[in-house]
Image (cartoon, rainbow, N blue to C red; front, side, top):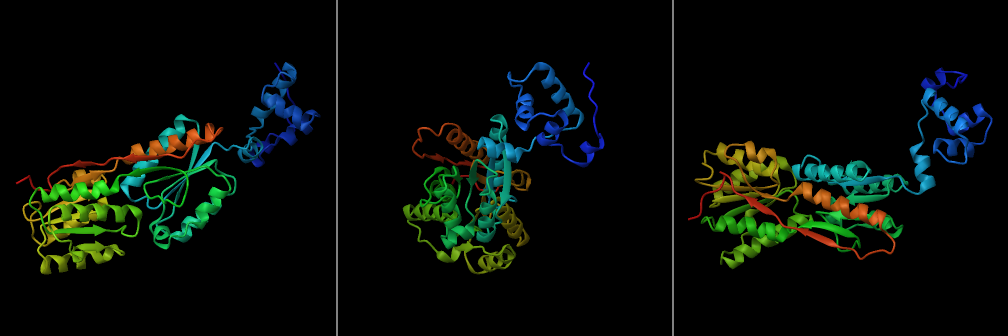
Length: 353
């Protein structure tokens, strides 16, 4: 048994012991202690055992930041999403966390709250050497302002990144995107096949690439069906509190037989507002939402939704980034993975005529 005289057990409770502290205690160099802690064959078995026992007794914890600086790797991934209340992004984060854990990476999750300023400050924080790479979906305000300077700075510094869902052609990196044009086209075609011709389109993300592409798909479906596009039926929702007044006006002044909400919360709110007006769903108005979350499944009637496969998108984005981090020589060409959506039919839409 090795007996060690510990100067002060209280040190472990009051101060994080360092390699320097241990080197001073044993009268050896910091390098010797470091080698002993890493089981180097250069250090005798007896000294290694003494140092290891002392480290356990003193509750030594390695400085992860210092280790990452020496090794040039932190095994940490930064993730920036625009809205954590959106079930889609919650599922994306779940997928990212799953892959990160499997590959022994830590995850720092940040929320831009659809704000350009918050997004820029978050990227500055992640630029401090705390992460090996970034997974990110652009905020709506950033896409509206078209200011990608914070992201371009990181790109010029060589920080690996993968953009998902909301992306930009001005950033050269790996990307994982939903086929949003097809998603909008699919939702509208589904309603047209059920004899719905006056479709209210409610988008809280109209300025984003995702919102624009879905609207273009909606317009294409109307065009192919020979139905004129009515811009008055498109609600670009900047403030969620405005939705009630807008929907009540549309129901009073427009012939409406269907509604599409471009996120789950909006779709559920549309269902509530329509029923408050005494209109039966789907007999009078059919409703489709986006993101196949629990709210869509458990409201009455259950909502027909377009599933974007958030978990799979998160897994795919994380795998692309880890592969880039661990196999960067020679660099491979950037790829864009396109994920198809799935329309899940439930009780909020009528059957085909």
